[in-house]
Length: 479
Image (cartoon, rainbow, N blue to C red; front, top):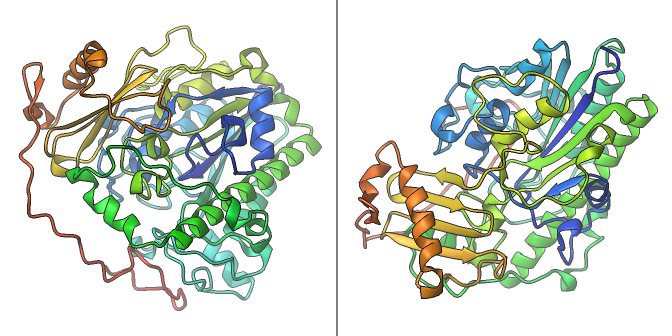
C-alpha cells in the first residue's frame, strides 16, 4: 500500500470564498493558497449547506445533508449520526488517520473514526473536557492563559496575541500536525486532517501579521440596497454589528485578514514537512472552511445567513494525484461532497450512505438546497450556479440575486419582471425541499411564510456573547 495516495485536509473556521487573493480580494495576503489554487482546482461555487459550525462539520465528516444528519440549528449536544465517517472510510481501506484541532462533536473526545485526535476545542469546558492545547499550555507554565487576552470568541473587538508566538493556537496546531506527519507508518497511506480555530474570533492575531496591513488600506464593507429594509430574521445580526464604530470595524477586518495570512503561512510548513518526508508527490491537498463570516458587509457579522460571505466557502484541491483536474471550476459543490471527492481521488469505495457527490464526477449538480434555523429564525437558499434565491418565512421575505452580474448581492432582483421565470424555477425547487414543518410555508406553488411579529426587542446580552474567562482552576462548566 506504500504507493497509495495520501491526503492532507486543511480546514479553517469562518473563512469565506472571496477571502483569497486568487479569488480577487483586493487586500488579503494569501500567497500560499494562491499558488495552491493556481496549481490545482479552485471551486468558486462551493457552499456550506448549513453555515454554522456543528451542522457544517457533520456534513463534512459524513457526506450527509442536514436533513439526514439531523442538525440545521446548531446542536452541540447531538451525537454524530451512526454512519461511516470520512475518517473511518479511509481507515477501513488501510489508511492511518490523524486529526489536529477543532472537531466540535459530541462527546468531545469522540474520534469519529480517526486513529487519534489532538483536540483544540476553544475552551468548551461546559462539556467536561480539558482539551490538548490547554493541557500543553500547562506544560509550558502558561496554565489557564489561553483567553487572558480578554477578547471574545464571538465578538469583533481586537488586540494582538498576548503570549509568545509559538503558543498561538495556529502555530500549536501546525506543530502537532508536523509531528503526526513525521510519525507516519511508512508502509501505509495516511489521512491527515488539521482544523484551525481561526480566523473565527477571538481576533487576536500575532502582531507581526497585523503589522502587514495598513489600517487605512483596509477595504470598506459593502451594503446592498436591501440592507436598510426591516428583514425580521436579520434584526439580531444587524444589532450585533451596529455597536461597532467605523474604526473598530476596520480594525476587526484588519485583524481578520491577519489571522488568514498567519494560517496561509503555516500551511507552508505543512507542505515543507510533506516534501522533506518524501510524501508530497503522492499527497492530495485540500483546503476549505466550515462557513464564512459577513464581516460587516450588509451591516452583518458572523454567519447563520445565506449571503455569499456566510455561505460561500473556499475549496482548493491540489497536488500531483489531482493534477488531471487542474483548473478553475464553477460547478455547484458543498461540504457533503468533500468526503466522496477525496475517496474518489484515492480510488476508494464511497459508502452507500453518502449523499454528496464527487466534485470531479460527470454527474454535476444542477441545483443546491441549503438551510439554517427553524421557525421565525429560519433561512433557506436555492442556487442554480448563477442565480440564488434566499428565503425567510418570517414575513415571507424573498431575495433573488444574479451572482454573475451582482457577485456582492447588492440588488434584490426578486421583484424584477426580467427574472420572473428564474424566480419561479427556484421557488419550485425550494418548496419541493421543504420538510420538518417547513411545508406550512407554502400553499401549493405559492410561498406564504409565517406572520411577522412586530414586537421584536433586541436581546440584552450580559455575557458579551459567550465571553471566556480565566481558565485556572478549570471552570465548573455550569451554564
